[in-house]
Image 1 (cartoon, one colour):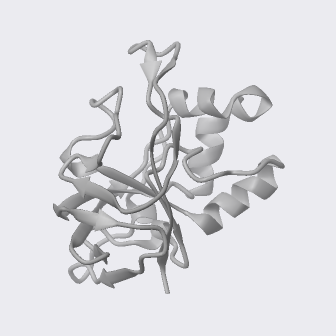
Image 2 (cartoon, one colour):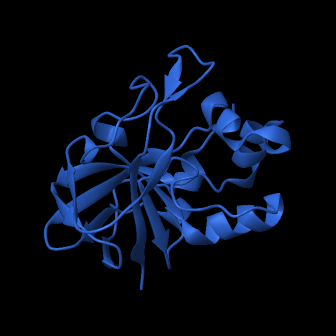
Length: 182
């Protein structure tokens, strides 16, 4: 059964050499019951709303299996939030989620899969050091992208909550299928 392993939100805005001069990719796990509204996790921030956030990218989910893959590849721990995700999910390959699929989590929250993550240079800088060289292409080539979701119905969730996955319309592509490498 798929479940929420961690819920993350911005820990602090940090200086960045990108066009905004600051980034909110530093997400870290929070505890307790967490509210999620139309623009995502309560108290979260997106420094660059042109490419992150908004209604169709309110929540970014990443799979623990993919984090484990990268941990072995990079020989470092990929803790929840390191990739800028809001939700770390276990027991489900979020890259095989279909566009339009809905996730019921907790008592009220309903999220809908909208699109894959497009890796960017801010993400590469976040990875730092030797890992950063060619990171965007390497991450994209593996197709372990994670998925963005919109909030269909606001609600609160907690670590350990199970995902009740409602299928997407017939013929909907998976997150992995619609990703296009730049």
